[in-house]
Image (cartoon, rainbow, N blue to C red; front, side, top):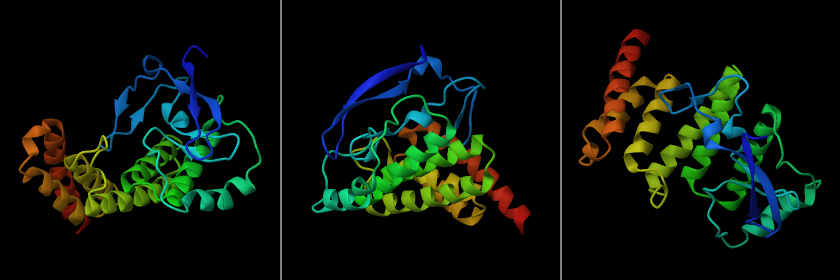
Length: 227
């Protein structure tokens, strides 16, 4: 339990106060990070992504720090009808195995969809779920949620709803390119990596620019091999 701490939160939907475990950053240092930023942790080390979501034990609404506090008109009523009325009160804020981590992320994706949360937020949830499936070698499930994450990042880019979040335009472009590459959509991947390389603000994010150049070469080679 030394790897964890309890965080007191109030449910964004019903206001109920509850606590939920979080992983201390010093207790979860990845030994490698994939090109789509998926971190890998040593066996026996807690995976922070299993604890990324908080679930209200009272109403069942699931959310992360990225959720906004505002609810579009009528969405709370929809959440109550679709989640709370079916919810059997129980606590998911304690130690979680992989199955419970997956359950909380799926519930957060559903909650975010009903709440009409930003596409960038939904993309992040789908991506984290895909990462968990990757660590479990569940390739079909990983591919399914990478595809959903890609769709949400494309919508986020289209409507620029990443503005005001930790995501920049260059990072969104990179995620679209890299997820497209991982899903075998090489032509699209090359196109989006090129957008970064040619972007007027490319030098403001040198790391993303260098990664885009590297992944452009990989995607172009994979595209040639696929033909």
